[in-house]
Image (cartoon, rainbow, N blue to C red; front, side, top):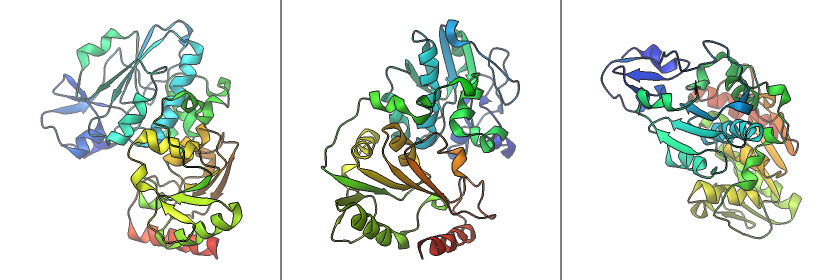
Length: 328
């Protein structure tokens, strides 16, 4: 296989018929002939710029939407929320990458008022023509704009919208307020979510107890979280977070959220939860610009800036040094 296809700014075509994702191919090589998805009816803003007046569009199919992580998906769905605000009657179909974790795919099932249909790759290309408008937004991590724009603005622009005309409320993931959650009420608590989808953006274990202690002293209520730490006022509630719906509900009812550049940040913003977020690689203006209830702290350095995903020991050690200085 041509490894350059894994970083292609869009989706791929298997044997000239089935749409697949670079992410899915990287997880499980399907065999057969792979080529970049190139079709006259499929728009890709990374290749040819598009602008769409959604007020009169009857149906939209988004290929390879809207990311392979939970946080990206929460933000991407906000762009679809903006489209629904413009045209409540539009039918939106999302074709998801194959091999994504179930907890990521679950967030799409909580959006029944926004997304009409959810399909998965491999997907027969002959069936995409059923939609009036088809947009490929796959593999966005490798799009040039992904490192230049705030993430909501990235999705909006690459779906053909003028990002400056979209209300800030929508850019704070307010669609979550109408999501059908498996609600959990744990009383009065602050929440500690130290883990991202990659170590480079997570809060190292050695600082968890210090943070929990400070949260306990500051807020004078129980601290719940997702770390195996002993503290007399702390409880690890990982066993209660058995689904994305329950995870979102736990965040929804927190008095305060302390987290890193992760899905928890974006979910907390959707419920207007006061949040402290530690950023180690991506500058806050690309993630929390529109989150008015978030205090963003950037502690990255020249070695780590702009890195989205890494388990590199040297980079992680570099970040640990930054944490050491910050928490000293």
